[in-house]
Image (cartoon, rainbow, N blue to C red; front, top):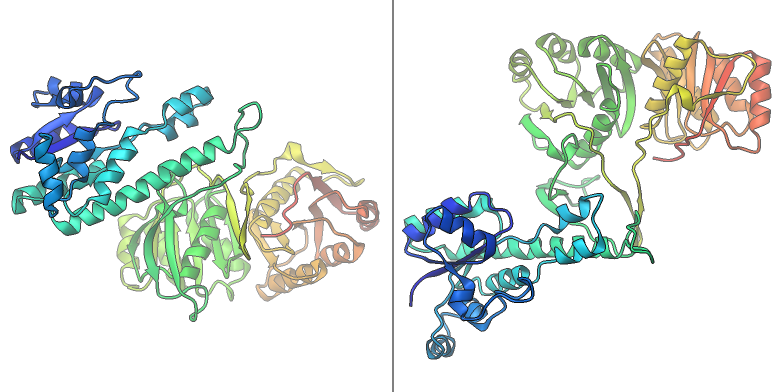
Amino acid sequence: MRKQALLSVSDKTGIVEFARGLVAAGFHILSTGGTAKLLAKEGVEVQEVADYTGFPEMLDGRVKTLNPKVHAGILARRTVPEHMAALAEHGIDPIDIVCVNLYPFEQTVARPDCTLEDAIENIDIGGPTMIRAAAKNCESVAVVVDPADYETVLAELRAEGEVTPATRFALAKKVFAHTARYDGMITNYLTSLDAENRPQKFPAVLTRQWEKVQDLRYGENPHQQGAFYRETVVAPGLLAGYEQLQGKELSYNNIADSDAAWECVRSFTAPACVIIKHANPCGVAVAANCEEAYAKAFQTDSKSAFGGIIAFNGPVTRECAERVSHQFAEVIIAPEFDEGALELFSAKKNLRLLKIALGGAHNDFDFKRVGGGILVQTPDIQLATEKDLRCVTKKEPTAQQITDLLFAWNCARFVKSNTIVYARDGMTLGVGAGQMSRVDSARIAAIKAEEGGLSLEGSVAASDAFFPFRDGLDVVVDAGAVAVIQPGGSIRDQEVIDAANERGIAMVFTGERHFRH
């Protein structure tokens, strides 16, 4: 019996070279449609599946590989004499390699003009059937769905004369993950359609897939186990696409805090630095360059910055690295490190350096696990602009105060509620986070500023939700703030507005609230 490989791919990356390698290894090539045409055009000897089975493609190509000569050749167990006798009786050669990737359903439904008919026509039937059959029979058949695996298969054929059992099993596992993701995408799309077949944000059945990057030494606490997974395709700009340049293995908390730092710092357009400690910013600043931004961010709360995560939204130079090297940090994140910075940081063997490309992508959903279920929401990525602000007091903020208010408001998005942020001249002066009382957050933020030797006179304050009573506002004003930004919407808004007018400060409302994060 001759050795056969069946090739039928939507993504034709590298398929010609792969086919040539298989021919060189003694394989007879079967193929369909566009793949067969491409191989023939490139001079690869190939037989159309329709010619092989003696049955023509039909129903506009919906039926072409669903044939016993194909599936018996794939599913026959070479170690079972009855199976091999059945193949011989019917003149069927085994198919030893199946190389298939599926119709581009994901790309199709991503198009704004995609119709339900377009989506359904791009649901592959024969492809999943073949690769699942091949994966089930991986003791005899190698199945390839990823062009990245072509060279591995060819290398083993050259060296061993066959694809090794370990590789066949690894490829089979990849198939079932691949088809699970494919079916999940179809499920997400179809169950998101309303009565008029218009896609809605949240499907009736939500299916997702992540791939394990690494096991972690432990989870959030030493008695918990942990692992890090990332999406199959990570959009540019998201943390999971990091490249670790040096340092120890990242821990569970390192990764969680790094994400908080990176999401905050990349929300600024000016050169910025963010220092995160226990998921909260303890210093945020913008400046003319990253070195100056770091100096301002560190000044906010130098005590809490010890052992923190530092993120920059621009290149880290040697000059910046020299300044940062004076403090102990767990992780430093940036889109680029120059050679001088890398040389200097190399002396700190345990310091983790993460390189992440800047990009505008965001997660489509945020998830929070609850007992027996999961909460799903769109991410909090809306940035307030000056046109979103509504002054509600007699005194209006100056142009500089508006700039500071918007800066403080953006910082407040990344601080755990209840949140108060004091800021001035593009830097945080004090951050109060995670208190049950907004009054206590305001006091803590003022204490932090005092400990850092920073005056709050002339500062602005951001509150992530409305002040329900004037007591919190009084703390902020007594600390030195002259303008406040907060959401409106409380039945007690007028009481707080009256208090702001009485104290002679400017207050602006936004339409956003950042209650809890």
